[in-house]
Image (tube, rainbow, N blue to C red; front, side):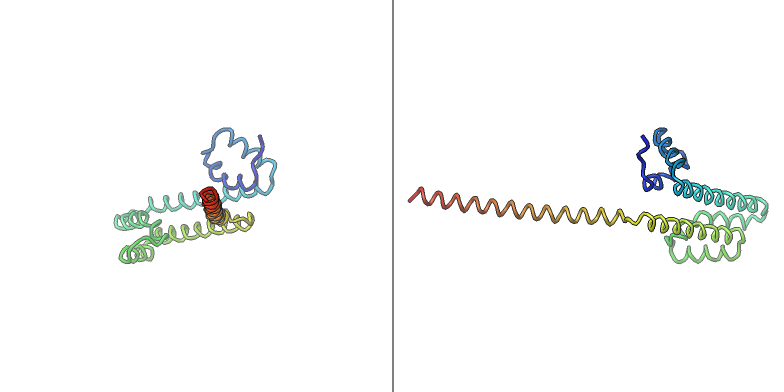
Length: 180
């Protein structure tokens, strides 16, 4: 028990917050957070980000309820249905223009877009900071490991072929000596 590293805890933190870990793993992460100040700080930073997002979403939902204009609500619904695709640049040109127009006209949509872009910025910043702190690029390490394994396998295969060729030559020489 109590064998989790800081890297592992940081990787499990979002699952811990959402309570999507097994009971034993929850206890392990909780124990680590109690003894590791830097991981506990990261945990509280994540909680603050989530609380800020929840607060912004509830503010937008309240302002949307207070807006009785049916057309604005319809615009806002179309906007919200396409917001994620817009931010990830997955919409065609016509849909992009429609979302831009709605965000200009509809104050709630504009505020939601600003919030989502800010949230994306926070997530990217947190990811970049974590990546710098870990100072280890696991994806590159895995790719290098696979590449080196292929090189080793090719080398071993060439050695095996060379060894077989030498055995065949000795066998031919041996058969020639016996045959003469």
